[in-house]
Image (cartoon, rainbow, N blue to C red; front, side):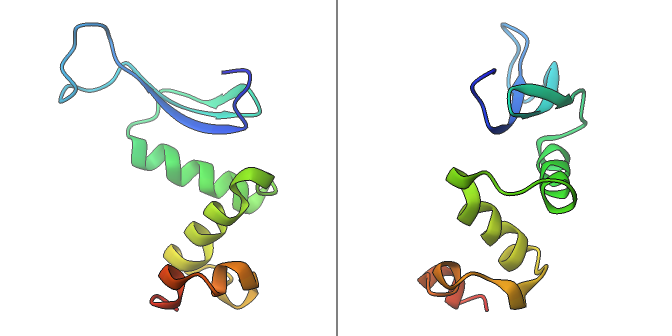
Length: 95
């Protein structure tokens, strides 16, 4: 966990079926657990995106991934999209 730049992780109790609720869903930023005991993976990912959008810069290795989520899927600041993201065929069908 200390080596993770950003992550959402789910912990399951040993021997529990995956259709049962997990033991913990957490968000890690720069090796530090910043949120835990979240109700779902979806809410954990949404909170991670919110923290990036409000407080943090994109990690260099995930920059374009998060840019697509923010600007294409969430439609936030679409007019400020980088040329690399704009020219990707997947994005062109959504813009």
